[in-house]
Amino acid sequence: MTPRTAIAFGAAVLAVTACTVGVDATALGSVTPASAAEDRSDVAPSAQPAVRVTNRELRRVDTIELDAESLLFQHDDHTVAETSMRDARSTVDLLDRLLGTPSRTQTAVGDGGACFPSGITYTWGGAIRVAAMTAPAAAGNAVEIRVLKDAVRTRGGDRIDLTGPDGIQVGDDVEDELRSASKSDKVSFGSGDSRAWQLLLEPGWETTDGDVQPDGDAHDEPRVERGTPSAAPTTDTDTRDDADDESDEQGTNGVSALTDDTEVTVIGSPMPVHARRSC
Image 1: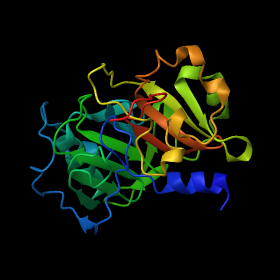
Image 2: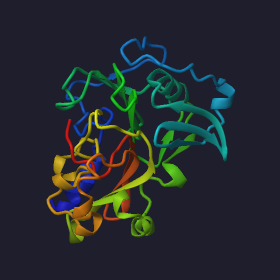
Image 3: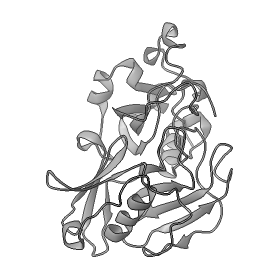
């Protein structure tokens, strides 16, 4: 397996992790169905009112957009509903209503990695994955979300497009965006034919010195492929200036795209760029 193939494979099996911690989130236990009506007392309680949208309105949704701190359920350019990533219960319930019963993995503290708290990971159609935590993370989010495909099917079989900000989808070529992005908003891994990137699409989840900080991107491929310069076997020197090392220690958190070469393989939030401290 070539290094570039390994990067693509790692992104393909990516799962979600807890807030701004750079650890794996895939539990190794069995996956069991989750009922849309099940008790969600095992996820962080919502600090905001439940999202209210009728089934008729929900059936009109044709796009789900992952932003830095929320999910937007849209019809054409109209927002039908929006769920905050601080609201695990509403996020999971609304996806249940729209997409049907997900596969579910229960995790105990540390099951998904050294920094991962207890919670449940829900996956719909192998396309969108939500890790709901039993307690909110330091940045305030109660879920982590990863988009693994460009579309998913609803309960009724209709296609829903899955995007990041500005309509960027898994499978898109973002060469132009990578070329125009500032050094602080991207990081490369490897070199030559084995190159991959993490590109910040939209900032969010501001952190302080007291917050838990990641090594880099939070996903479940090997550490060498995560969004952190120190974890990469070879880092493109153009993506970071030595003078910025100390000031960039916190990194920039938000929604990011991971690529194989310049093709998007995963879109996720929270997913920090250039963060150097571990949990």
